[in-house]
Image (cartoon, rainbow, N blue to C red):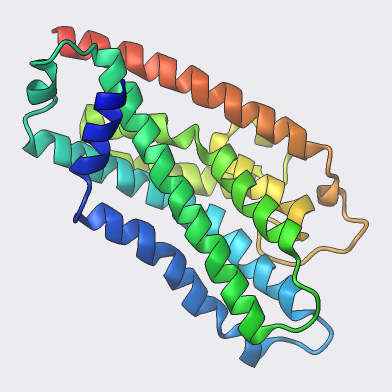
Length: 251
């Protein structure tokens, strides 16, 4: 398994995927710099900054970015021979698929860490007052954790029907996530999980509007629910898609 992980990691060096992981958070950083110019006097700079970035990230990058990463990974595999080179070695197809998901999860974690650093730098340069360290770190890690189930979904979509289908699934899922996040059925839509959890963490409505302190969506009881859903769904979707990939490669 370590050889599979090492091989997957080396495969993406000096590729567009690496650039996407680095530059996507920086784009959000640049957008957030306008906070200093357009910030209303009655809203704290940190509050507005986190509301912007920690709302746009799960709404835009997590569904579409994950779809694009999965599509790029599958395109890379297709050019390399559709796993044929790796299958020369005594490695199971399940390990190959799981390894690819694990490496993509690592890359999304790296991107989330870059986002947190970008938020911190942006806040220190445009906002005043105490730095909300716990909110920055907790929000970034929660968005990453609850978005993990999207990786096997999008990788399956890319492996089954290609890039366009993967992006279509990500786009449709992103819209469904935004619509479902403020509703009771948000638990059934994986794309809504990171969006929903940002309501109690940073106090932003899924539509991007700051909420009052007593707003029902600020209820923190959804946080452990979202964490549990993210972990269970990630394991379950990885297992299901790995079984699908095994049957596909056996044909």
